[in-house]
Every structure is written in structure tokens, then in C-alpha cells.
Length: 177
Image (cartoon, rainbow, N blue to C red):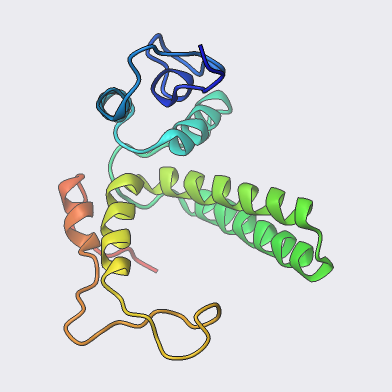
């Protein structure tokens, strides 16, 4: 048996939970897709990262909205503070050129961003698919391909995030500011 870690068992846990180093003799794309589908069904959609952050929120009694909506003002202020802190720490690490710190700060920022999405009840998995598909319809701009942002071609359509929110229970009302 190889030392390959099967994603359908090792990551998504056929027997529940994370099982590092586990092997599945019949691992193929179909079994990975089935495991991923089962995982998403049990966890309200999303991916492993969302599951990790959801577990963290549950362990430390942090809010998780069931449907899209606005949390309390105190929670919003707390999330904004966390996001600003992580953004500053990432920028500081980039300015110092500290790759290990950059790596850690990117991961921390992703964690806080996912937590913020959970607080607002946002369907990240569905939203990311829509944004990815829209981004893949963009075109390469002229210039240095390493620093040029892809552009929206004529007729480009942005992702319909409103419909995704409504499909997940949002009433379509805007938040009071």
C-alpha cells in the first residue's frame, strides 16, 4: 500500500472526523465526489475550511447564523476589529518579507473571513462557485501577466449573489446602516 493519503477518508472522514493517514482501497474521483457531497450535506454546504471554522465557533460559543442576515452591532464591531487586525498583521509580514509570517497571517485572515461569513449566515460554498465561474469568464489584460488584473470583457455578467442569498433564506432587504 502506498503512503498516499486518501482525500475521501483522510480529509472528509467516512467514519466521522479527520483521520490523517487513512487509506481507502477503492479511492477514485467518484468516491471523492460522494464523500464531498455527503460532507456538504451534513455540514450545510461548504468545504473543509468552513467546517474547521464552524467547529471553532461551536467550541467557543461564537455565533453561527442559520440564514443570511445581520448579526448584532457588537458582533459586527468585533468582526471588523478582527479583520483590521489580521489585515495589518499580514501587511506588516509582507513589508518585512517574512514568508513564514506571511503564510500564518494569510491563514489567520482566511479563518477570520470564514468566521465572519458564518456570523452573517453566508453560503460560502455556493458563493465561491459563482464568483469563480464569473472570474473565469474574464480576459487577460495587455501588459505584464504577473501584475495585470484580468478584465471584464464586453457582456461580462457578475455572479448573481442576491439569488444565492435568497435561495438560502435571505428576504432581500438591505441592512440599516
